[in-house]
Length: 366
Ligand code: OGA
Ligand code: NI
Image (cartoon, rainbow, N blue to C red):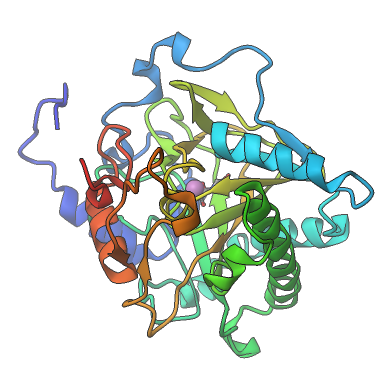
């Protein structure tokens, strides 16, 4: 990695990371302590201040908004979904059927968790993926290039939901209610996406795309030096489909035609994006695109991301390959078979490489 910062021999990154992790109080803990300069391990190698202004669209372009109202013509909804999935990889949905109360309570529940008494909260701090629920800061703290300015809880909700006592009381009921609703909405979206591919409505469901669900509750504390780091560094998502609920602050951006486009908060809407495994299944027809979250001054930003992705034992050997109906002479198969196990391992190594697709290791002709 090229860096302009001279290497200081007295900078011990490993021990700073360890001290941060040992504190168990996350980025919020740093902010609560009144810090005015962010620790060096949050400095990104290519921070936003070094980006050309032209890389962020200042105009009114926004990702597609799709109205799922049941009285709308199905063919029209399917066509809108197809257009968005092929050209943007991202869209917002309105009239999706999840009541505003549930959305509001989910945001409040995530906020409530992150803002509870530190002594209570640190009991949930962990990096043990065997747990159904834990909270941490930066899943890749010790392996990633630079840390990002956020704390997150992870809750594995399907196919085996946690026992109620595994979930913190402050968000126990709402996580369960929200996840039930998201599973149903996820099925609806999988049907629409299947139809958008010219397949039977249950095709993606029959491949198990809607079986696993995990939920991340993100907390992006205000950042004293937002130009040096990110709330979430650019990445693609690993599963089939992600559904994001964001509060009204904004900061999520999507890479579209080499420019970063803001995903403007829209009250009551949910953001949907195609993830890597769905790009693979569709033989690149649907796009899993890079996105990121800016760090910001001001007030904390809350978002809740629900991932339709297998995340349970016994699935490591499932093999994914492009759907045969989508492969033809004009449209030859571009991916080799990938077991979920390989997929998780190889994509981690491929991540973070100058905007390269995390799917690169699975391409037949790299
Ligand atoms: C994610 C993600 C966006 C957000 O969790 O993968 O991209 O707005 N989240 O928090
Ligand atoms: Ni993401």
